[in-house]
Length: 284
Image 1 (cartoon, helix red, strand yellow):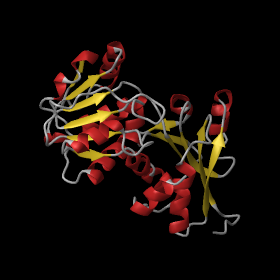
Image 2: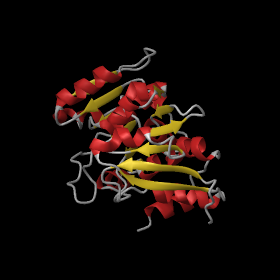
Image 3: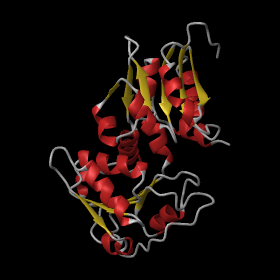
Image 4: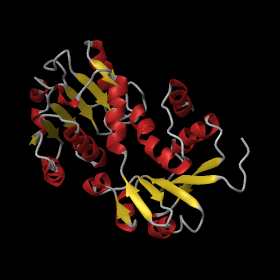
């Protein structure tokens, strides 16, 4: 499609950025909805990220996404934060306001929950306890969103328990509903008994990485299993869960759904996540 001098501009900042699928994702929506706009990859080294973020209004950008390793720096650089970003301590979406001020948002938790609701119709966080594996940035978004959605308890396990304890202390729960409990790594399979959801937030199972070591024999047949990894789409964990009859949800939907709020803010159209979008993003 033709881009005019009035095109709405947005992009994604990261270092490196060549691996990002966000330009393909947003480009698909721009084409589908016939929007005069562009979404571009912005390779910004860590020592220039604050300068780059501050330049967004001057360059006419409506905002941008922020990916590794810049999410925490973006959190410290923007003018104001929404409640979710403040709780996460990280920003993945920046919106330039009418006054030129930079608002930092975090849509990772939104993307995670929307992906589960779409991939496992009828799923509710209140169905029962969840087991979250890993304690990195993704786990922070997953745990917080599960508590906010009404999970009665979230078990958090990580190879280094101290990191899980730190995450649990940071997140807590603002309205007092639900609880985070940490456990030793060796307890992960025992905790499967009675959970309604299992979430792998680690890179184990990603192409080129060893699979997640998790024997699912104690997992209830009604439980949902999801993995934030989407290369491959069906990780060893999801394959094993599906083989025993559990519902599984792959990780690419989290990427697709977390992009919706930013696109709506920058380009003025609420986009849809479709099979065509999924195929386009996974292509190549």
